[in-house]
Image 1: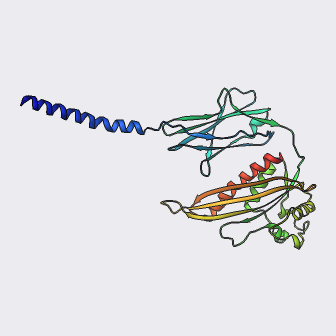
Image 2: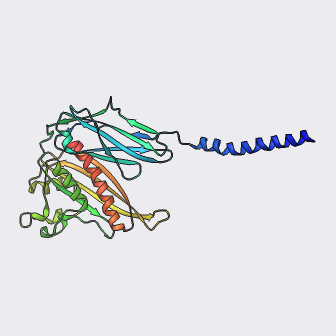
Image 3: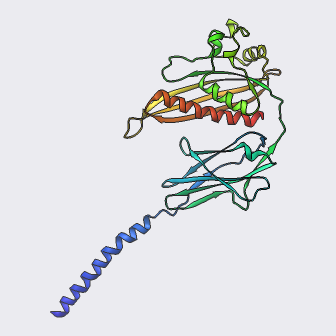
Amino acid sequence: MKRDILSIIFVTSILAILSFLTPLTLYADQIDQIAPVIVHNSPEEGYHRGLDIRIKAIITDNVKVTTVTLYYREESQVKYIPLEMTHKKGDQYIAVIPVDATQGGKVEYYIEAMDKEENITLRGLPISPLVIRISDEKKRGIKKAVLLIAEQTIGQRAFFWWWGVATGEASLSTVETILGERLIEANIEVIDPSVMSGKLSVPKPYQHVNLSNREAMQLANTMGADIVVIGKALAREGGYAAGSDMRSVHASITARVVKVRTGKVLASVHGEGSSIHIDPVSGAQEALQDAANEVADAILAKIN
C-alpha cells in the first residue's frame, strides 16, 4: 500500500514537471531565429557631384522588421555615419545620403536590418562596403527641361494638363512640381509655364492630353528646352484599411524623356506610390509624391 502511494506521488510529480516544461519547450520552438532579407543593388552608374544620393532597398522578415539603418562615409573618412532608412510602400525602405558626402570621388555604405528578436542582416560590410562613384562629368549637356505630365487625382473627372489652359492660368501639377524640384537639384533648369504669360502661346492642335513625341518636341522647342518629359499620372482610391477609417490610395506614373534636338528617347520610366490616409485627397497627394520621386530617380540615372 505504501509502495502504491509512493508510486502515485512519483508519477504525479513527473507529470507536474512535464506540464511546467512543455510550455517552455513550445515557447523555445517559437523564438524567431530567422534574420531579415535585404534586396538591394548598388547603383551601377555614378552620381553627379552636388546631388543627394537616394538609396532604396526591399527588406522583408518572417515576423517583422524593426529597424533599418544605412551607414555611409565619404572618401578618406574612417567612421561611418548612421542614417535611419524610412519605411515606404510595401517592403521598400529609402534613405538619402546628403550632398555634403559627395565631395570626394566615392561614397561607401552598407545597410543593416534588424527584427524583433535582434536577428541582423547586412548588405555590404564595414570592411567591404558598397561603393558609389562620384563624378563631375555631365553626360549629355542638358541644361533646360520642360515637363508635360497630365495628371488625374481623386476628385477629378478627367486629366489636367497645363498646356490645355490659358498660359496665365497654367501651373505645374503635383507630379511636375516634384520632378521639377529634383531636376533643379541636378542643375537642370525647369521651365515654369506660370511665369511665361504673354511669352508662350500653345497652338490649339497641341492642347490635348496624348501628345506624340513630335508634338511634344515642337512645343518644347518653342520654349528653348533641351529635353521634354512626357507622361501621365493617375491616383485612384482603394478600400478601407483593415479595422480603421483610413483609406488606401494608389498612384502610378508613366513617362518618357525625349531629347528635343534629335528626337531620341533617353528614358522610358514607370513609378508607383501608395498611401493610407483618413482623407483620400491628401492620401492621393502623398502617393503621387512617392511615385514622382521614383520616376525622378529613374530619369536622373539616365540623363545625369
